[in-house]
Structures are given as structure tokens and as C-alpha cells.
Image 1: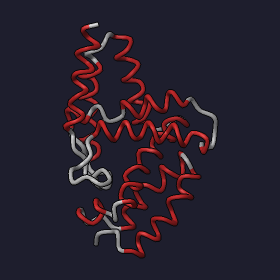
Image 2: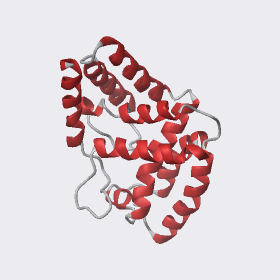
Image 3: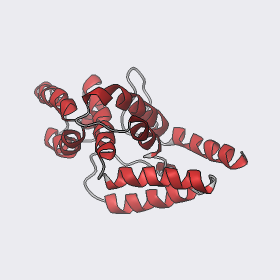
Length: 192
């Protein structure tokens, strides 16, 4: 029991990892815990749009653990174009430490889910990646492109980063987002 309590209290640190997008109607940036929770909700709701049958519980659990390494490594803006290998290595070290706090079988299970997300080879991982890439887009579309404008992120850069994983994991979601991104470009939501 103590290992589980120590682990869950360690996860509280995710609330202090700030991201680059603001929650709707708030002046502060969202944190990684909020992001993971919202992704899990979105994945559950989008499951009927998945191209193939998959284990929804696995997808939701994957999304709940996918950013835990940020406790040690911090967050990176999704549109960064360099430094991903170093950041992934730092996240792996973080999840190894944090999941190592749990009883061995539970820690190994979570590490496996985290690695499955990183490898992005299963239908569940493809779907989880689609959801992970879509949520910041949805927030930016709803808040006038806040992150894109503040960080000088162009329309082309957004599409280059989000289109492939969303198309691979949930084509119906890309069909929804693509015209909205085009409209956002016409409205000037993107940075230079």
C-alpha cells in the first residue's frame, strides 16, 4: 500500500508541469495532469470513430501515463522541431524512476503502456497519438490560436506535426479538423 501511496503522491507533481496552451477562459497555462485527464475523456468519446476495433481501456490508460516522464523532463511544445531524442531519453529515465516506485508488476505494466505509446506501432497507440495531437489543436482553435501566435507557429508547421498521426490514428478526426485549420489560417490564428 505504501508504494502505491508514494507513487500517487509523486504524480501530484504533474499538476506543476505547465504546458503552452491556456485552458478556455483562464489566464494561466494548463498543466500536464489536466492535459492527460482531458485526453482520456476525449479518447473515450472518440472511440466510435476509430477505424478498427481496439481496447479502449488500454488507450485511456496509455494516455493517462504517456506524460508522466514530464515530472522529471518537463514539457516541450508539441511543435518543437529539434531535441526530441534528448527529451525522450529524459522522459524514459523519469518514467523508469517513477514507475519503479510501484510494486514490480504494476510498474512494469505502466512502463509497458508508456513504451507502447512511444513506439506508436499498435492501433491503440496510433489512436492515442491522434488524440494527443488533436487536443492542443482543439484548444487553439477555440482560443484564437493563442499558442500558435505567442510562439510564432505557422499553419504549415502545425499541419506537418499533427496531420500524419491524426490521419493514421483517427481519420474521421482529421476530416473534422482539416477544414477548421484552413478556416483558422484565413482568420489569422497562426504565427509568422
